[in-house]
Amino acid sequence: MDQESPKSYFSTKLIFILFGVASLLGWNALLTELKFFNNFLSDMKPYVSFSFLNYILNILFLFLMMWKKNLFSLKFQLIGGIIGSIIFLILIPTCTILLDKNSLINQIITGSLIVLMGFINALCSGGFFNFVSYFPLEMIVALSTGQGFSGIAMNILQYIVLVSVTVDDDDKKYTIQAWIFFAISSLILLLCLIILLISFNSKYFQYYLNKANNQVKDDVTSGLIIGEEGNDEFSDKTPTPNPGGEQKEVSFKELFKKLWDLNLIMTYIYIVTFALFPNASINQKMFGLEGDYSTNTVILVYNVFDTIGRYLVAKVKPTKKLNLIVNLGRSILLFTLVFNYYCQQTINGPGWNINVTSILLIINVGLLAVTNGIGTTLCFGLAPNQVEDEYKGQAGTSLSFFLIVGIFLGSCCAFGTDAIIAGFLDP
Image (cartoon, rainbow, N blue to C red; front, side, top):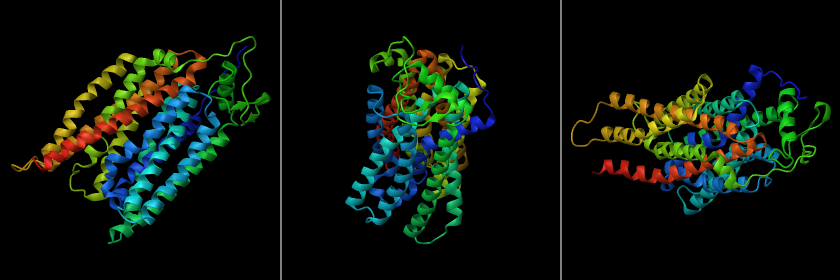
């Protein structure tokens, strides 16, 4: 007889929100500090190139984790991903600052570190969505919402740093701001790591992890074993198979067949998003704000609406039809957001009033973000119901892979949108 599932509390949802924060904090920290990297490495065009570089290894390792599901234990993905993020958040800005400004060696080393951090991001994002797939939908929504909060937290931290550090020399100002920003970001990740380790002692986590371990012998939860009588053995042992059951495996091809529609929708979501954000969005003017404040405000608008979108899924009935309508409808933003930039840069004539184009920028970025949040959470929420229980973790990994494919392809498209908006400056 199955043990009755434990009741979830607000604190449980809060923990999954923190997991969402941890899963994307590394990338969000880099994204928020693009102005810093642009100051020292402007020849690299960080606003366009960093997304492209970061997701090269990300795609490769997520694919390997799907192809060979025991490549990394879930334990390694979660803990190793957070620890790796902390290391790279310290190492990347250190190299950027210490090496000569815009030098070839600086571009090569910093670019290489961004590429390597893609592997860490693959562990974090893929690991956490793999992990949460074994839990109820409300926890999937909580983790997805936490990913939105991750970006907001970085924006708030950036505002605090901008106000606190005022130095006339740009290089010195950006250096001090970067040290403070990345140090605090690393501390937040360290806190999330401690909470992660403590959480596995709770009855709620033990119940669902035990349930996952009992469903399949060699599943991705290898490395997370709940021992008898509620004792957590956070080790690398292999789960005990079901009595009389056969080991079940699903190939990449079979998994794609089960989830092909959601995988393709997820890819399209992030092609549209990264074709327009951050580069085409943060290059536009936001009222009278200048420099760092304008950039951070545009990113904040995106993160706030993205978080709202992820949370809204908890208020609706998740359906494929809703998912399709939302994500095909946002295609119009490929035109409207770029056209808004054209209106701001009109040379032959007075151009549009800056307040009008700023309001339209907020509307466009807001719609881009809220539909991104809704679509992402709908995909992750619907996927576990399209596969058998023993494949739920793999469903999360599959969607994470196609999410990264979408980001990579969208980052490639961003070079195109960058060329288009650059053409508006010299028609």
